[in-house]
Image (cartoon, rainbow, N blue to C red; front, side, top):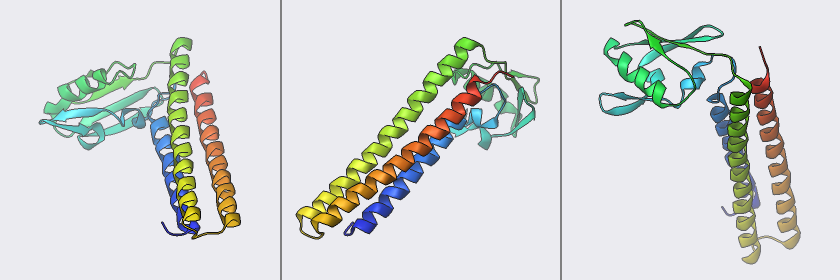
Length: 188
């Protein structure tokens, strides 16, 4: 990275990726509603290879409190059910030999608080990632300044711009986390 513009562009792209990752991570945190994203991190032992559930079966949400899983290979029902139980999602899958049904029970107050804590932890991890991106970018700018490739005022402007970018990203992170928290705490 030889210019301030390149550093800012790189930082913006990395912060956008951090936001996308937060959205993905939050999708896997359970709310009172059924969602196939709940199973995004579940890996099934598919003939010795850990494989995402959505790559070995069709996932559906026929009603707000139920997820159904139709494996393409019926012999995989046992391993899929075992993987869901091992994922510790707070759900109890059952099968009828052809399909797995996962009823999504309503969340009790204690479970809601646990999920909110987990959400805060995930959000904080992403805030730290954004701050690290800012630090890396500022170090690149300082290096350019030391090498006399940019003037002092451009150095200061670049640091200010990086702070604005970081603040905007933090605001988006906080808004997304607050929306998810509201969704978790909402009683249906």
